[in-house]
Image (cartoon, rainbow, N blue to C red; front, side):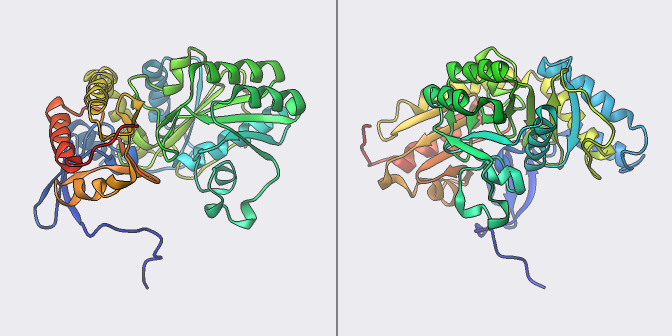
Amino acid sequence: MQLFDVYPLNDIEITKASGSNVWDANDQKYLDLYGGHAVISIGHTNPHYVSRLTDQLNKVGFYSNSVKIPLQTQLAEKLGQVSGKKDYQLFLVNSGAEANENALKLASFYNGRKKIIAFSGAFHGRTSLAVAVTDNPKIVAPVNQTENVIFLPFNNEVALEETFKAQGNEISAVIIEGIQGVGGIKEASKSFLQKIRSLCDEYNAVYIADSVQCGYGRTGLFYSHDYAGVEADVYTMAKGMGNGFPIAGISIAPKFKPWHGELGTTFGGNHLACAAALAVLEVIEKENLLKNAEEIGNYLIAELKKFEQVVEVRGRGLMIGIELPAELAHVKKELLFTHHIFTGEAKPNVIRLLPALNLTKAHADEFLGAFKKAVKGVGHKA
């Protein structure tokens, strides 16, 4: 049997990792500023994380949600404390797509409606309904297509108001990333998020804050949407939640009243997953990583804005997009293969930085030095 060839692969095999560094099979050291799609939130092989998982595995690794799992309650309490959403409820799943799928289903159960508003540039996952609200027709199979999704321009308050005015009583939910990741690190404006909140209140629609990539402290706030000063009805999360262990969840406002069988999962909230997620929150809290993400992120953004070759620097905290002109399309590969630095990308020419939240200034400077060499010789002004 062969692997189903859907991933374009770099010819690199990672065999060891620690903190913000990884090593390949040839013992070449790399700086990891991508964290495997924003997953590594507290650094590779964090000692507390490894200890937490090992201890739990030596007790019990898995049992189903048919029994009490006190770790789930502990996780809910800690998450409420660190996120500031103490009166919310937690439902645990396995991935970001599954979190968004369940959030949209929950919204439809709540108000009995079908229509969903999503936005241009959105990416919400690859499962059936999550991919239907993703703005990429290429990955939407015919069976995923539905007339229930309304795509509107991102950050366009007029279009949003007009759509609610025309169809408000049919709209079940509005789903939005606080900062679009795959869409190119584009931030929802404060007023736009506030407008979503007010219209959802007016029409009894559900405001779903997709925080899968832009959440868990990455922007310096626990959920990037918090910048707008309003609360969503449901927050979805995954990525950095387990520092590499598959876990995701939805944080649900108190107005939603659950009933037995409404949602379900086999692996969601298992013992090992909860141990991983608790370790992440404990490290975030102990090491004050939200503040670190904000400070190091501010430093990187300020320094990157000094490069005349850069078209635009976008983002917040340690979720940064560097838009480059077409003549610098080679920079991402040069950073990886010449300077041994992992970064992400968004098409066509945006470099994405999504490092661990405990990234140091020394690591930031290492990247800036390499970036300077990679863009040298090309002048550009937007």
